[in-house]
Structures are given as C-alpha cells and as structure tokens.
Image (cartoon, rainbow, N blue to C red; front, side):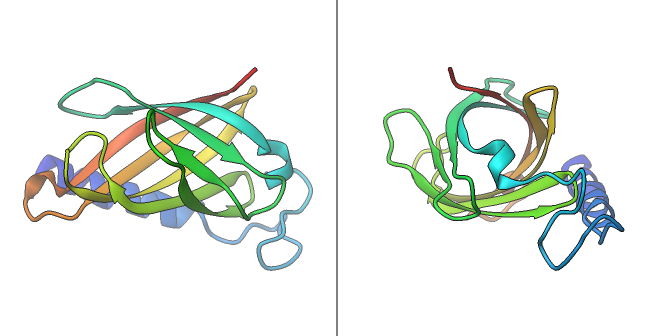
Length: 150
C-alpha cells in the first residue's frame, strides 16, 4: 500500500469518527450550544492550501461564506467562483466544490472536499483533491488555513 493511499485511508477514518453525532446536536444539521454555524463564518476568507507531500507551493483561493448554508463560493485567481456545498456538525464545517478545472494540473477536472474548524479567528483543516485521472497521483491532500479578509 502506498504512503498516499495509507494517508487517505487514515484521513477518511478520522473524518468519519470526527463527524459522528454529538450530544450537543439539537436536531439533524442544527448545532447545539458551542457548535459552529454558518453565521460565524459569514464573510470573505483568504485561503491557503499546502500539499502534505511533493510540491509545497501553496494554492491560494478566496472562500465567500454566507450566513446560511447556501451561496458559498470558492474562487481561484483569475477564475469564476465555484459553487461550494457545506454542512455543519458540532465544531466542524465540511465543504465540497467541483468538479472544476484544477489550478495545479492544467486541463484536469478535480473535486475537492474539506473539513475545517474555526480556531482563534482562523479556519484550519484538511482538504482532499480528487483528480479525474487514474494512477497514484489522482488524490492530493492539503493542510488549509484561512484568514478573514479585511
């Protein structure tokens, strides 16, 4: 088993364990006391994604978050915004964008998913890019941070 595949499997297990129902949940999809909400993230965020391995060049983007779970977009420099679906569970927001043309691999379609938390006014988390190709390089994992735009 390759290192990337092992990491992806461990990451998936952590996400599944971390996304289980919390005792703080009042109802399906509604955070209880202390849960992260769309309203807390509403605004514009400057995002920086750095691969865990290989080329360490960061990918920059802008995440525009609305006070509810509709209308979120992810925008890369000189590109139109990409619709982003979001869901919340306890202290985490999960995102999914795409498919869209990859910034890192010209001409290749990609779908990205992420799991983030808000810590000290910074969004932190992990994103996974799934490229529409076959082979070992069809998945890339990123460490992501985001700061609120002024």
